[in-house]
Image 1: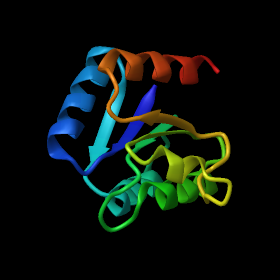
Image 2: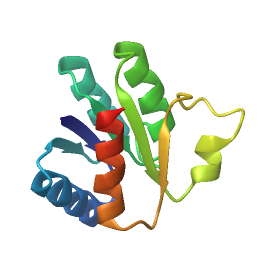
Image 3: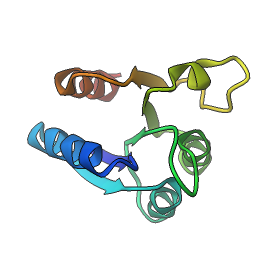
Image 4: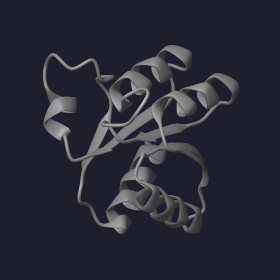
Length: 118
């Protein structure tokens, strides 16, 4: 499974990349939404794993644009602002998964595996 990770916290991003690669996933990571979006325009990914609050383009806008590019892409938000994503008036894609920070890395891998199987 090819995963595009957008997370502006450098330590968190490195930790997530390491854990996902150790679990066997192909991960490309970016520290802001705009760079991640530019990569999505060039390459196909099965999963967008994104924070919500990021510079240059927030995760909700990134997810919305990702679905416009590829309606089959799966979306998972990793955020401390899950209420923003889950709000009825949110622009977040409706089939998105939300994993609230803080979370255990094993839970992240389990949730990615569930999305892959879905």
